Length: 423
Image 1 (cartoon, helix red, strand yellow):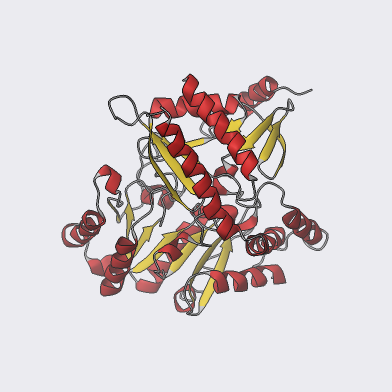
Image 2: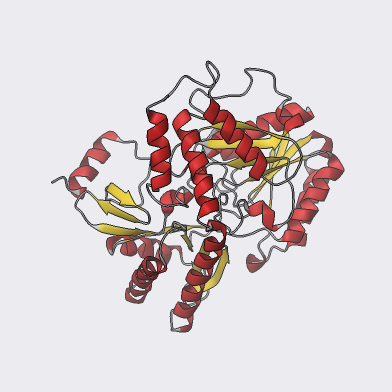
């Protein structure tokens, strides 16, 4: 039998150190919200592949769709010889994204690639070059993605210089003293002191920050930001890579605000585990770049498109929007109960649907990233895959598959609670 120790030795000898691993346990198989390592140990999955598995590992409907497509066509490159699954998925995404206006879709591979192309299209459509992003944002590890990302370590350190004309404003976070008004005024101040509004192509924002800590931008802020964009002819890009596809109780988190963006970037749970991302935007904007100026060799592969179409059906047929809210209520109630029972290190419990988080603090009320790191490690050792995040690295986030049973979720929460009590 292969052991985790043997796999770790092979990994250290062959894989770049910068491609970090949270655990040194190696997955062999998985189903729904459970994973087994190469030694046969079972883990409850509260990480969901960092938000990729909203419908769980190996959902039967997705597996069947991929298997069916596999026997028809694996690859021609859409730009060489197109195929129906790409078009069918584009039609579906145009239909389910917010807004009744005409839309068009470009299929790609990763969230970073979707973000890059959103900026490209926005620049082409406006004839402008500057972009405004937010502190705490994560938009990918490409050069433009890093420039837009609002956190230095570990994403940007040592990799500069980055593309020019990218500006950052504080993300609204009342818990840490940044009101919606503060954030909006900061954006307005940028337009007065740092960049001419007539040079700004787009503002990009996560309706709920992912790596930044699962903070949701208030509705009034999103609506005011939309109005500010309209006032100055600036396009609004929303990054739904982590918050999309039923995770927040809506298909897309931006729907909570009632705002219609110009572009939506998506990836992760779009295709139930297959590699796929998409940029959906207003048709008139998406058609500005000429033929050959945007695209991807592997983007929108037939199998990934088949998986995505099946994923959307699963979300609709299994009522996962409602289930997302149920999961959020279940987990936040347990987090609050843990705090009330004596685990005073827990605070700022929050959820937008099934996008759930709490923060860990020391006895002086300071963010406690060390405790978060210890909890993640101890939980994994005890059979629970858990993630941390946030500007202060003290946030525990939960992205458990929405298809997980209440009993399995409770079992995972028991492990987390017991680990915290032992630390």
